[in-house]
Length: 409
Image 1 (cartoon, rainbow, N blue to C red):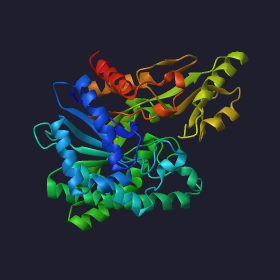
Image 2: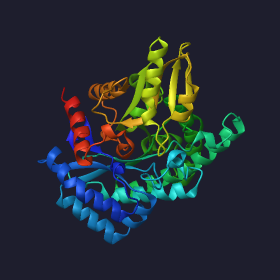
Image 3: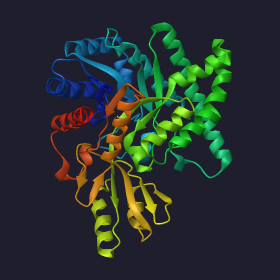
Image 4: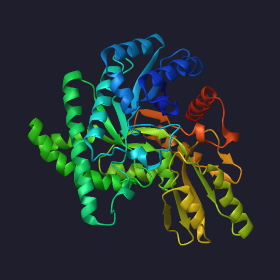
């Protein structure tokens, strides 16, 4: 839906199911009611997540036309897509396989190009579009623990291979714009233990690999000047600002945005999400109580990386919650864990959420709009502790309403 801060919707990766029939059934069940509750008098937007299987099925003309018709009948529209999870995302052990297949593979390239072809058809064509680009968020190239990451040669190989594949998608986006006049962008989503984890790493990859490789290739392929090729790359490849992920790494929103601006890089969309955090008191009993408060969030489906701040001010990183629980010691002063908790809750007893980071990002968006796409992304409802679970439609409504209320404060 259109808000003072841009187009706001929720990411449909909250719904289980991997076939297009499953996806569409979930949307038909939830979306009309959510639209009535949240945007009864105006079009309702959302971020569409399609598995690889569902994308192949939806691209079939009869399915795509039927979905377009259904969206129009229900006064809904798609303005962004989530292309990070390729395969099963619910009721299965996901963990590091959320990155598979990664950007070293042709499967990831073809999947992403297919999503953009679908999005080029689904983007609204009336005054609602008003020059609004469409975005597809994607993985941060790969998962660093699959490689000998401390070896420079290994890192260079991974960056070169993945960048070459990203540039294949950029070329597709340039062609699609020429054919359809639709501007679309690929939004890389840094996350803990991704090949790209931080704002600095995103900038380093962009300037050290994407631009030099891309300028040479696009200039030759499309007859562009170096300046035009660089502009095309910056237009078609952007950062997905997942608030949870940056908060887990203790990165301050204003500093991230300032760094991007310095290098002329853009944010494609904000994924509005919250992580778990807690500061540890000084007494032994209190410290152990806080550590134990994290234990119910140790579940087997998703990775819940932990970044600990130590008494020396350094950051210690753990690939999942079990490793952090086992390694806890008296140097840890604060933990932040990659667990997408409900954004409308700030306090979980001895634990808190990083909700304040969301407020800060939305405040910055108000002051210096840096994107026009905002997507609520809480997908962990099935694996939350029992006392935090609620009806799915009610939960989505509370998430989106909380954002609307914050933007109107």
